[in-house]
Length: 251
Length: 357
Image (cartoon, rainbow over all chains, first blue to last red; front, side, top):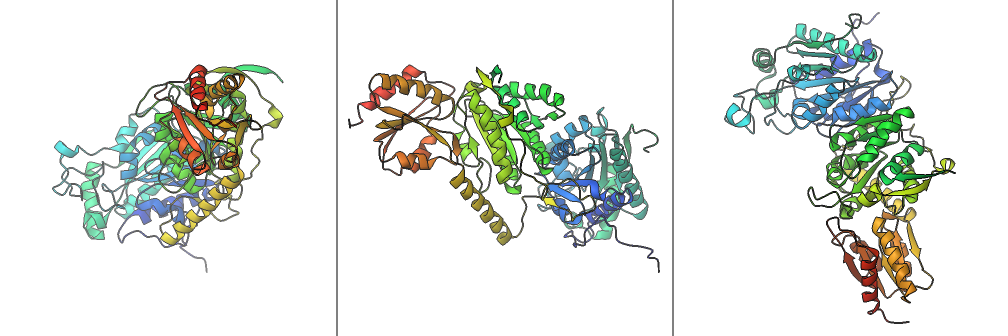
């Protein structure tokens, strides 16, 4: 009998440690499926960052290194420059890692048009450390360090990374997607595929921001989290293609 | 062999290339900037990679990435920037990645100045970042020795899978001196990293990971024990020092790096005036050449430590002689460089306290 569905070869068999309802698992799987479908697993080296996804090196079925907090784009730069052109390098970073402590590294990797793919998981909060404010936390959103809600007067306003990076000449492809339902998951996968395909074709810097959930630290059920994502996070961070200078055949 | 007149910072760059380092990640800071510029020009000629990083922090993490792929990688800086690299050096040590980090040290603390200093000794020889680790530290005192120790730094890094620090200063970085590159004698990368480096599985082996993370306490303790075993082995095998006038000296001056040049001149001058003094010059600052000092304890009555700091290496000298010898200190700080006459005067003053044999 021909199997109609099998687990992707891009993931190991290790059970993930993610909380129930967290969409890291979905994003891992979409990434892994894309690597498999493009036949890239054996030539890929990933960079795990600091945060909930720090153990991603246990889950992705490819070579992985683990970077200091925020430094994944710099580590990926060193890796990519040391490896032959046929090797694929990606970073997998959360919003605390990428948009706060690592904001310098991401901007400069993008400006240099490093031929890497950045997977940016934005759930508007620090997950691993217990739900503190991230640079992406929405105005009014309550977190462990903004108990009365984030106030633009004292905590500033959310940073929209995709939009900001799109102002640079360097990057080739920047898209923001969501994973709150099946339709959006498929769109997310399409974006990831375009990004990895572009890297394979030596196009340059590609960046996919994925709006994600954190039921534990949002204090919501998994279903309510998906609803909150689609209602509030998507409104503050509109999905869409923010930059695309890829050749037509790559797209 | 052709003799070349080169600047210290450029010598390090050329020595690294000839040692098989084709990946350099730099950031400008005085007094090491010529090294960055040299690599920017030379590495593309050799088919290598030069990246001017956005920060010292990014540069050391680029080194971490390149080292993960198993290639010889280097970054350089001067004191304030060397501080910024400490997080990355700790990660390199934890993940057991080979790399060479150059510190062309300057006066501190803080922004300090751009004059030569030796006040980063503690930071360089005590790991510098968080966690239980050491990095081998090599301190050349001539530009010719800089060539040898740059190659040696890469050898140590590869053999022991550890970050290694080449510690010079603004004086050695900025001075010019004739040097000879003996191309055949500089070892290129000999250690194969095929058993751990990340280059993609190729679909023929299990995936690998490079990390310093170990959430389980007993697991992390085991990892630490393994690191400590490595440091013990380095300590036993890799101590380096030069001793001048060992045969007939009654007592010794000790100094490393640029100030050892000045101290050697002063020692020679003092000997010509009948003072029976020698010089101990540590070449490896970690591991500290304790065996050299303890071997000389019997015959020396006093050790005069000369540093361009408030007194940092003196702690290691005291530990090495374990109170059996009187240890005295002369230092200058903040980029002030003692001249030979100044050290000569200190030697003469100290010689009065040394009993005649």
